[in-house]
Amino acid sequence: MAQIKLNIRQDEQIDLDVHQLNHYADIVEIHSWAELLESYRSLKQDVHPKKVFLVLDDSAQAEYTSMHAVEDDRLYVDFSDDLNEIEVNDPRWERTYQNVCVPKQLQHYIQQLSHLDHQRNFKSLAEKMQHYDENDLEALVYFNENLLISTNTEIKVKVADVETESLKLAMMPNGYFSCDFDSFENFAIIQQMQHYGFEFIGLGASLLGWIKTSDFKADKIEDLIQDLAVIYPLDPSHQKVMKALILKNNYLILPYSESPQEYLDYDL
Image 1: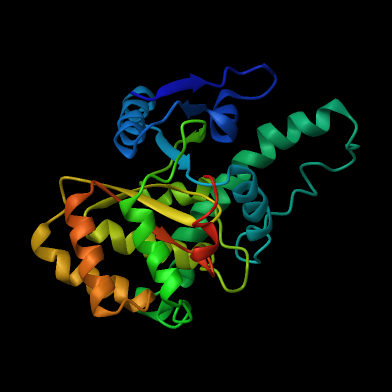
Image 2: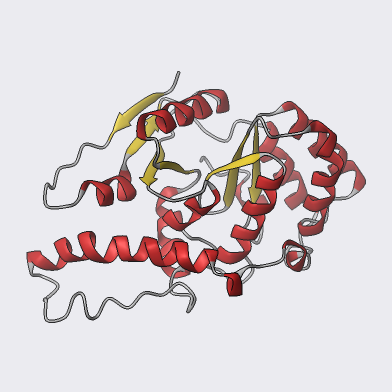
């Protein structure tokens, strides 16, 4: 089984909840998706009732794009009152930012993702990725039939107290580039996959990930494939392949980026 390396808190001035949200652990020495998902299940038991979030690909880039994604007017949080009159080089600035601003951010993201005015209809996403070409569709298939990790991969783990698995997206809202699905569009996809018995486990700089649950029903597979064909231009041959993979695997990986083929040669 993959090893879990706990990120022991070094700064006692940072609240434990914030520390866990920033960086609770790393999953290391991973050889298979089975190992990764077993580690995920183990961590869920360890931190219950808090929820576990995995940064699935390119952690540094995912953090960077998330930082910009939350500049969206619907997600932006003004910290000016909290940090008022504290200079950036003052030790109180970092302590206040971590212990006051970070929790405020998380709660704001949860509220905004949940807000009825911000809910996106799944079918409204139909046009955004219709530019995918054959190589992009092959990448989508590849993500679900091949090992996406190497033996030196470290999967970053975040932990927080959120109400549902879908709302774990608030731990790292993402979708920054105009041609990507944005945070609210990603949330619509996450909620739709939940309808089919898939539990959201996390995302990275380009990928969304789920684990199959006991609520998954094989007799709903045709409806699921047709929903995937709403947001990706899957022709009959790709639909057939994805159907077989979804029935076989206990996970699902979907891209939210403009051109997933770019990641085929990337060492995740």
